Image (cartoon, rainbow over all chains, first blue to last red; front, side):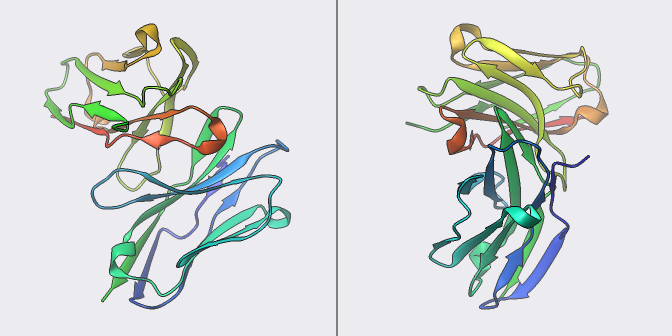
Length: 112
Length: 113
């Protein structure tokens, strides 16, 4: 069974639109960590944010915000006022102990 | 700190040949991971080292694959008798504290003809 599900394969928006990337995870552990990574066309995975299972406080960083809800096992990522430079593949990941599981990614296309 | 380095960045080989990839993690990171990524997919776990010990190896890793991390520093991933299905991006990542996530290298792209 998939530990991390990103149901949206590809999303296209026009610049300045808001967009939310969904992530649903599955774990039996009480202690775990959730992450988002960005993979631009250049290919290198870039860390964006981490969250531990005990901290459900939402976080905002500039145009980026994250919504963590344990009740629905979701860790969604919203980009406000999207820009062309946001075009990339975004991966959600779950860490249990030393293991990291990645979703299949959501490709975001931001058109000018 | 120069990040995680991988070499070579690209490798084209003929089926049946052996290839070796090298990863130099961030110097103070004691944990090292190898992942494989194919087009349109997320990274798939291959193997994990803590210092020089290989603690976990994926079922995906056939006997043709072997990884080492001598002295807990750099790591190598060797693929023997390559097959076309081995064509992928091989990613190395390192970490010091697991709750900080992984720092990835730029990857080594393998094309098997």
